[in-house]
Image 1: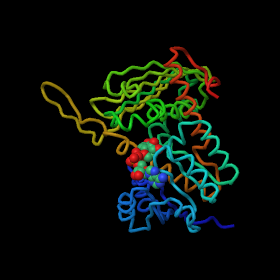
Image 2 (image 1 turned 30 degrees about the vertical axis):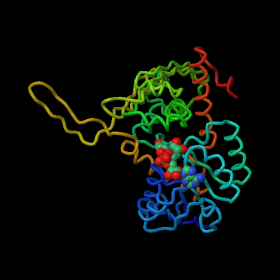
Image 3 (image 1 turned 45 degrees about the vertical axis):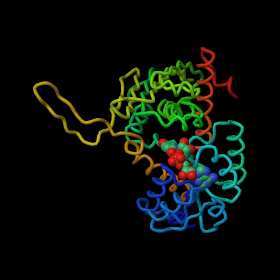
Image 4 (image 1 turned 180 degrees about the vertical axis):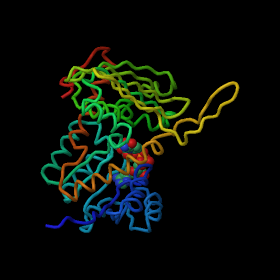
Length: 340
Ligand SMILES: NC(=O)c1ccc[n+]([C@@H]2O[C@H](COP(=O)([O-])OP(=O)(O)OC[C@H]3O[C@@H](n4cnc5c(N)ncnc54)[C@H](O)[C@@H]3O)[C@@H](O)[C@H]2O)c1
């Protein structure tokens, strides 16, 4: 049978990330046809639809699920809605791309993944950093043995500034909200599962973050099944901008990545040599990766091949986040199997 040429989409949630995905689907991905966008905020839905060639919009995502012309949905609404929408979308026979995290609760994740399995639809989770050219090159070096057996890894991931306190309160905490990307990156780059974490945490940026029950500065040691060790360091505020770097050190060498910049210019004077700050935040730094992850989801669905980031890949970082919080609270190393 000839391969289907185009995939039709609906986007659920037209906030920051939903608008970006909708724009990619409608303007940058030739084989995608975005038919409808939905948001409980009518204005957000309308504005997004207008920016996407005036497609249909709705305040009720069920209008997308019941539209038989739509093959796949992108779930970009607030995290607390993901699991429920996955279940309903699967039952409606839609293929699903869901933003991270699937949920904060492992029981809800399992229920959603079971619904996907039962319906026989495809699900990809939005761990976009895997599609970033820098990190892909690091993965290639580890996978091909270019740097030998990996021994140590250092993931540096610092935001330019913290989100509003109202967001912090519902975010699930730094491990579930921010480090979750780095947990995924750690598994992806190392190609091995994490068996144990040991987390230290502090409030160094804003006492209000501590008052909200969260941390803003964390360092997590990871031990992998292959014997390697890694460290992830996160801060909610790096005054010089978004700091996203990684280094893997192995028996035959080392590979590291630098930050990305808007230009390569350096200014040289008698006092100093300087350059502009790194790209400011994820919408700039990772924009190409968001495009690529969606293209690969579309390709997987059209060719009926495995998606590059599975439901299980979505679940494991949540276990790692829960283990890290427990480790911080109990001030001891925590094994992943303590969380299951
Ligand atoms: N992969 C990434 O790098 C990345 C980056 C940002 C956000 N995210 C994830 O994407 C999701 C959205 O984040 P955001 O920053 O765009 O948030 P946001 O608050 O800007 O947007 C969320 C939107 O969802 C809408 N919404 C809420 N409930 C809805 C429902 N039942 N039906 C339809 N729309 C609904 C809200 O009205 C809002 O417009 C979160 O899960 C977040 O973790 C991922």
